[in-house]
Image 1: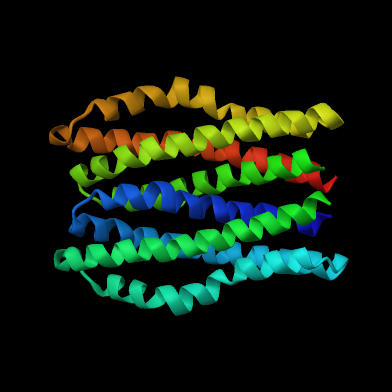
Image 2: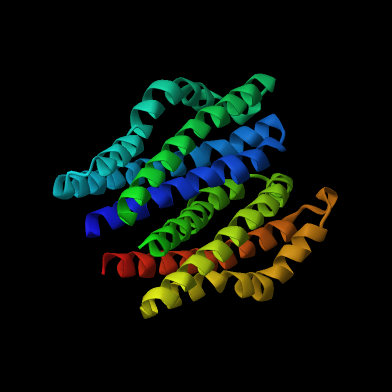
Length: 143
Length: 143
């Protein structure tokens, strides 16, 4: 079942990166002063958005193809959970992203620090989406 | 094939996080000044090691168990690629890690940033090991 295996692989790559952000990168960035925090967040955000968005789309397409072949709804569920990171980002994260992107490191204050903290909490929901998608796809792949 | 599916999931978690470090976190850290780089590297390294080392061990155990059941060489080589992250880290990356860990924030300067750049190049080896293991496990899962 090539599509299903590849969907699981891509969802796990997405989730491994998302977990790393919550447990490693974001806490390490939080020890910096507000200006450096913002300076580190900006390029990280631009690069990670490209990686995360492509993995979500590719994993979604592969999961849908597996569902099409087998009609097992767990592939569909996993595919939808993965692609849900797109509307979640556009609706829930975009306002915070936009404010942070518009700030110069020189303008960083306790307020930008609070925004970055909020960004970390919101990102955790994307991590949960990835974990849930991976769990459903792995369950389908085991059977 | 429950063991193989779980091995693939864990290997892709490892690879997703390792790719993220090489493609996103490390380049973003390089945008900081010398002091910021060292400040962010220290906690990131401490947390990242715990996550990567555990995933490598778990993925190795699952891949080795899948090989034990099916005697397909791809599980064994994938498992060994994941395990190889351990000696690779201990033998090749450790001197750089130790030099960086021994530096106080007051010692941050061109030398610490050069070491962090070197660390980034060495980390690429771990990223490659993770991708090789993931590709082999996916190939073996497909059949």
